[in-house]
Image 1 (tube, rainbow, N blue to C red):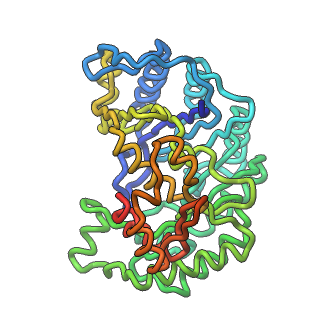
Image 2: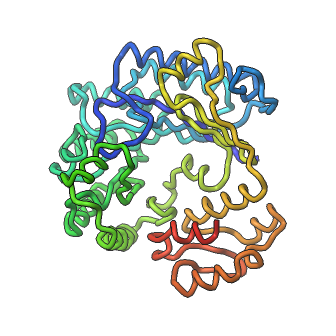
Length: 397
């Protein structure tokens, strides 16, 4: 059986980014402490080996103490928690799961010092290493200070460079940057400068996204009211092509639609989502998957989540048993996100069906359009197909 991943959602930020639609809120020390206690309790209660139902009654899904080889603190800004709070969460996980000695343990952080001195920040990072955190991921987003201000970020480009240098000095040998292309008013030249700046620093992993404007966010409202220009799809396509060419030429592997790494530095945790491995989420809005057919999700609202845990009720508000067709569709959608694509024989072994027999006409059309490559062994996206992946997914859904 595949080793599991563990996800911890920490829903606190110092400010709200204009493009964000995640389940997050403003940081408050007392609220964060109460939340951490609830999170630890959820993890500890789960050690009964049952996924609880919405009304607190067991759902009947037995789960042995599984081996976990990835832990991911996401959010929000998990680095806002104290080292003591992070340690308490990690201890609870190690009681519930058999965590491997070589586990990848990721902490999402924001650039900047949060009011700490250089030495205090460095000492904190060294404490993270002592606790077993060995991968840092932070949202640089852009090196243009004007764009950072527009996004509502609390850091500037100098903070990005300083944070990276501090992480290296603290002992982190696995660091990821997030950058966003297609920001309102961003030019191709500006995006190229972002790529060049990032590559000078040689992070071990790069997550490079095209801007996705979500309804209900401040940025969506600003665009609707004419305060910001609408994203230009043709310009975004140009930026995506430049991204692949520039980053791959610098020696990085393009292993997933939006993700690049130095050889050997793939995100082991995120790869579980795309490969169909089991993962278990804790905290508000966290999602879980048993690696077969069952998916479930926690209460999205942080205050309601804490209240449910404190009342000894399950935080699970949604549970889905995938049908055979749903499982097959998911395996295609998720598998094609990886640039290595889908192994045709593995698909045949799992589902007893041949992808070519199911989608022969669709394969022909997508191949002629230059969106996929397919042979007897693998089905995968081309570089053009990665840009237009939603079109491919819709065709094969």
